[in-house]
Length: 485
Ligand SMILES: *Cc1c(COP(=O)(O)O)cnc(C)c1O
Image: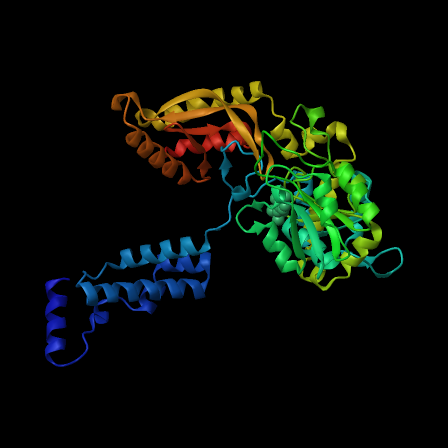
């Protein structure tokens, strides 16, 4: 606080009044009349600017009173108001460069939508649509009509519907078809996926009774058979998405469970998780059960729209017509239904599958999964010098081979040969201790996250590894290193 302000404060206090350093701060009106604040009003609007200016003044006043801080200059107050407004108006959800190598990264939004599909979404968002209007009959339509025929064609199912996500799909299927009765499930399939999705909890919420059979590693057909009785609604299979049990294991084939269920007159439900529409082996990828195979045995199959399928967040339910009808008319369906943007995106993505020959180049998920290692390495070799130039002495930069993950519970064990740019502590620190390496990685990760489009890598042996399998926009990535992080 300046001497003048301090003495004035002292005088006020001595006179038994509340200290009022406010007198020495500019008024709101005075600040609003300045050119700089005028520019903020033009950019951010009067209401938000006024709030920001008032907040800067209040903060300065409080700092003076509480801590005896010096009253800031006018320019400082305006600068703080501008910074507040910048933060308020900066988009929170924004693009990043995914250099984790994980193709379906749940924290980074899973599948990337093809540009055509994104355009289809934009079209239906800004105009009225026939979402629930039958243009042929001229009456009320069903929103599922936009995707049902495509899903059926691609999976062989009789009927299909979509809801908010696969967790919702499982919840709805169980609530509509099994509430109040028992659902038999193998102990090895009582999985937890991504924290909040735990099969026993979902079953409890759906109001059905979990009947565990078998053991963690081995479940036999006789276990299922022995558990089915008059109060049984269904046998459920759950794909062991994010782990694998190896060694002395037994699980019963879908065909055998399906036959058992038909004989016993109970339903067979199959939660595929990722649920893919293609024979991945044909693309040189590790095999993963297809929806078409599952539909042959199960009465109802559920899977995600934004995992291997490569669309947007939703859960697909495919199966017997009468069962899908019962699912559709359950009250929870309304609570879990999806918006027109989901239909627009999924319709466009599913249609791409009608032309498998060109799917690889059109569907980003498949393109990234099948990206040849030589191409990834060439990309790493083009970007490494740019990164090295930007970081200078701050890091050792080298091109390395590595392994990418598929992610989102698809093929949890298998990895894909990839390449990337490894950043490690520069040699001048000597070989360095593990803790120094850890600190380097942390600091470097912080720096890369602060870039205009944040760059997210992964940590590997005291290195920050930028696995470029999942790097989509090379020119934007390269351009921003000029900001010299
Ligand atoms: C991923 C997964 C889910 C949850 O799907 P979301 O689309 O994330 O809700 C459920 N079951 C299995 C087996 C999964 O792999």
